[in-house]
Amino acid sequence: MATTRFLTEKFGGYRIAKQPPIDEELTRVGRGTPAGELLRRYWQPILHSADLKDLPVPVRILGEDLVAFRTTAGAVGLLERHCAHRGASLEFGKITERGILCCYHAWHFAPDGRLLEAPTEAAQNPYTGKLCQGAYPTKEFAGLVFAYLGPPDRVPPFPFYDSFARKDFHFGLGEPDGNKINIQPTNWLQMMDNTPDQAHEAFLHCMHSGPQFLDQNRRPITELAIIGELDWWETPTGLACHEARRVGPDIWVRSMELFFPNCVQVCRPPVFPPAYPGGATEVEYPPFLIRWKVPLDDTHTANYSIIFYFHGEPADYFTRPTPAAKALYNDRTYEDMQRFPGDFEAQVGQGPIAIHAREHLGHTDRGLAMFRRMVRDGIEAVRRGDDPKNVNRGASGPIPTYSRETMVRLPPPNSPEADKKLLRDTSRRVFERSLAAAAR
Image 1 (cartoon, rainbow, N blue to C red):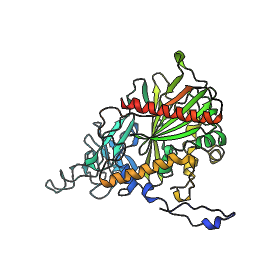
Image 2 (tube, helix red, strand yellow):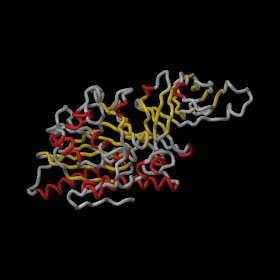
Image 3 (cartoon, rainbow, N blue to C red):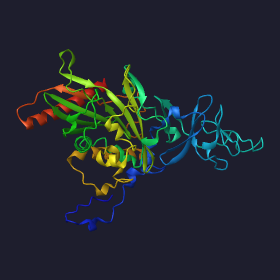
Image 4 (spheres, helix red, strand yellow):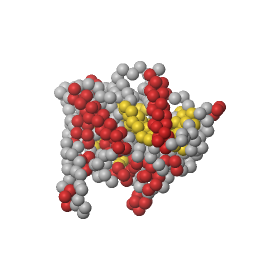
């Protein structure tokens, strides 16, 4: 792997005109590539359930061109797009009670890929009842259709996280039905790298672009305009990403969770000033969303989100988007993108595939380095024939998660150095408590 260039010469652009290569192992997602084979070991969302109506839907994921459909009996199919007979696209096919008919010669395929009928062939032919169109298993959950594209003998259980089991939530979607602005023209890894990079929030989302985050009462969170004490811990599901900051007499422990390999859980922002019910000195805020970053191919990645709403709370995530949500997708003018950039601009601006050998990682990039190491470890596990991290094949109940947005009433000590230590210690205590609770 190419090493980072360290230029020390003023006006020395000529010295670095030749670009180093991309990291092929981590960024390529096609079948047979290291990261592509890793990502195929997990259930991935591919579209909204509501998008499956009376016509087939073309789908691209992990470099494969597929077609999704719902039979008139309600079963969901995901097949290779080009018919096994003569290669016509099944996106122009006719949906039936039992499957889909190719428009060219009416070869009839079931959702599991079996060829049910070949009307243009004689009754006795080597295809009917024997030939299969390439197909993948699907599952619907919370308004999304998920698919598993890996080896058929390695299908993992669907990842049912403890956030899904809460009785006080109902689910919504983070992207409007049929809205394709959730696709970013960039590689999956640089979108996932954003999660353990908490340091960017203070500058990009607050100082450079103005406060793009709102609290639960939709007021700007100006307390984000400072970098707190950062820490990261590996968990059974992935990576807990913490940032502890001082807010007057309180410590705010921000916690985002990276579900390996390409999913993120974000918690609800606090209300400022925080209320501590019943004389308590600590209050937690539950998860707000889970978002998958799904590679369509090497240079396009889609966002699919499940939003958690309390019962009676309006489901207005995309009907009344926050500034941060608006800045997530490519639905703004170029001038707005320049004046008020968000994650979209920062990630897409790295190029279709970020070149890691151009980076100069620093102290606040430790979480990013941990995540990339985790991806390499997952790739090695697949090569050995083992399950990679977070497959959860032996889970007996909801999978524990570890992200908790927490406010703690702890006035500052006498010195800045002592306060920094108090912030770090409090952040670790919050994480260890989550870890202990999950183990029970």
